[in-house]
Amino acid sequence: MEWLHEVSYFFGGLLLTNAVPHFVSGVTGHPFQSPFAKPPGEALSSSTVNVLWGFLNLAIGYVLICRVGRFSLRSTADVVVAGVGVLAMSLILARSFGRFHGGNSPGNS
Image (cartoon, rainbow, N blue to C red; front, side, top):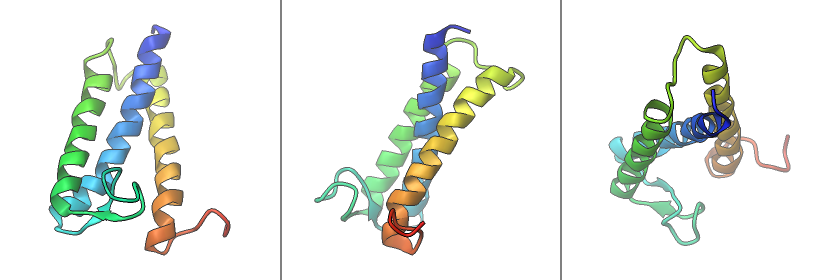
């Protein structure tokens, strides 16, 4: 596997993970933080904005994982690299959104 493919799979994992809270909040009709709110990432954006943002993350994540190189679920290296991206973004989102939704804040761990 080329190192650029690994980078692509890592960022694909990041984006696929970021798609989840935005898309789910949007399709359930709930406002949620997004980079388009003022201030970005803190104020709430509409459910429509979150559906669109989540879908864009999903589409780009798909391209980075499924259309770059030859990603294989049977390749441990491919899955580990994408999984590290998923884990990294999961921890970032848990810390960021936890401040607003009752989870751990950066100073409370």
